[in-house]
Image (cartoon, rainbow, N blue to C red; front, side):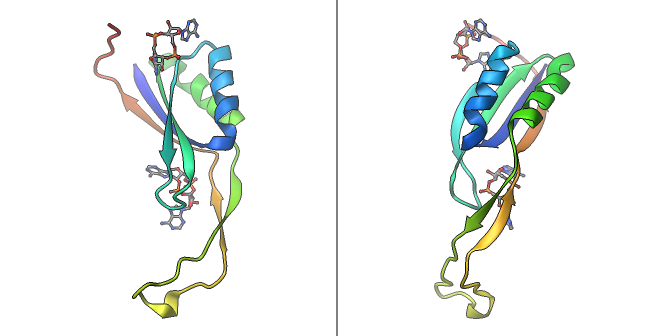
Length: 109
Ligand code: 2BA
Ligand code: 2BA
């Protein structure tokens, strides 16, 4: 068994949830925050058998898309004013950041 951890954009989370339910996969959604943008995103925990990992990855890929997002400038409080960028910078936020971990034990009580 594997635990798939997928960090996705909030905009895609409902679509992904529905696609997982439709394909009969169980999942848990956690509200999370990106360390860099400090904006909300959604973390999915999906426990599934090894042979289903590939299909789950395809579902994630098909339902999450990357988008460009503007990062507001942060003033360099006591920092180095030379490296201060006074205008918003665009970053590309990926469709999904996915980790696949081995599960040692799985129980439901
Ligand atoms: P939920 O996804 O809201 O599911 C609540 C209950 O609904 C489940 O109880 C199960 O009895 C039923 N259920 C869920 N998906 C189903 C489906 N595709 N078809 C038919 N019935 C379905 P539990 O199995 O005790 O799960 C309780 C909660 O634990 C779940 O809430 C979910 O948040 C989490 N969970 C369960 N299995 C998981 C897994 N493999 N990976 C990640 N999270 C899991
Ligand atoms: P955030 O940390 O808010 O990052 C949003 C986007 O900002 C990133 O998109 C990346 O394009 C950019 N970015 C992040 N850190 C940066 C830095 N130090 N310098 C320049 N640009 C930076 P993604 O890479 O697609 O990541 C989307 C979200 O996925 C992240 O939100 C974070 O919540 C999660 N994530 C990404 N990589 C991770 C990792 N290795 N471990 C845990 N979570 C991760």
